[in-house]
Amino acid sequence: MGGFFDIRSIILSLPGLLIALSFHEYAHARAATALGDDTPRLAGRLTLDPLAHLDPLGTLMILLGGFGWARPVQFNPVRLRGNMRRSSMLVALAGPAMNLVLAFVLYTGYDLALRFVPGGFPGDVSQIIVSAAYLNVILAVFNLLPIPPLDGSWVLQAFLPWQARRKLEGLQRGGPTLLILLVVTGAVSFVLSPVVGVVHLVITWAAGIIAGL
Image (cartoon, rainbow, N blue to C red; front, side, top):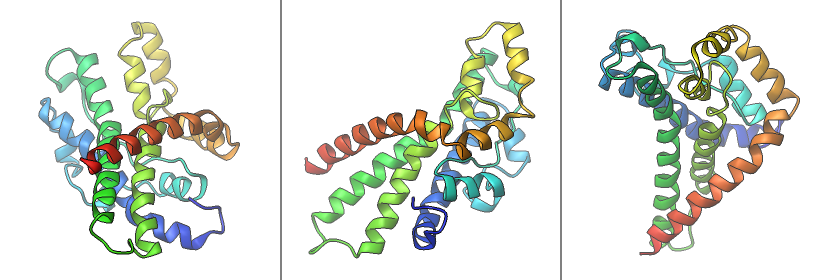
């Protein structure tokens, strides 16, 4: 990802960032719509247009700090079909799942392409593709943190009793501030970097196997 002053790395990361965030939020919107809630569609979120999904602060945190978020897709759990808590969890998991699928597709496509591109890709092209895949892994893992408004908070709510869920919902307003503090202090990186590393290793391993078939 580079550091605060690595402008070149930031620029090369932008295509992957736009893809990762757009597909992540689109997956939430698509899942909610498929389960019967048209709130995301009415809000203009059922689209892959990055401008519909970007959160300025969250995007900046990804580029400079390595972890961040997009503008959360709003949905109405009451309007979802089936068990409300289970359906809400499925909507929440759709985003990280999409990012993991994208990472796998990008790495597999990259490995396959290298077999047919003499001498490989130019350095910048390789960095854009690899950065895009890695950003998807980061976004998937980060969003599973059980801190509002991240997807992990919805997953956690599915397993909590009513009173505990109410307390977690009460943290919604202070969630972004807490996330910024955790990113800036390096706490998020300390906790999640090993997880990101393991998930990244598994995905690249699987992609390598598929590409080698």
